[in-house]
Image (tube, rainbow, N blue to C red):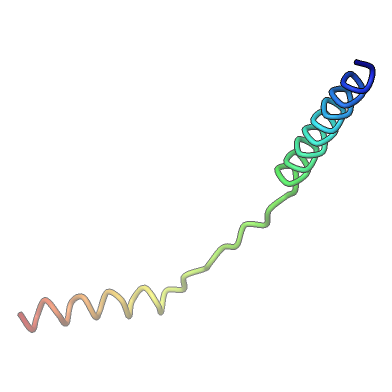
Amino acid sequence: MKDLRKIIALFIFIFVVGTAITIASINNKLEQKNTIETVEISKDSTDSTQSKDNKDKKAV
């Protein structure tokens, strides 16, 4: 009976330690700051896309 209690205690200990490590790992990943990449659009690129649209409209 003592061996059964030791085995159950061991499994409970492994479960608790595993859960704590998993929660700590998830928290660490969530707290990392992610850099946000931005893309700047210049006037030249917006004019070129608008002129393409206008050419298509004129051709139709």
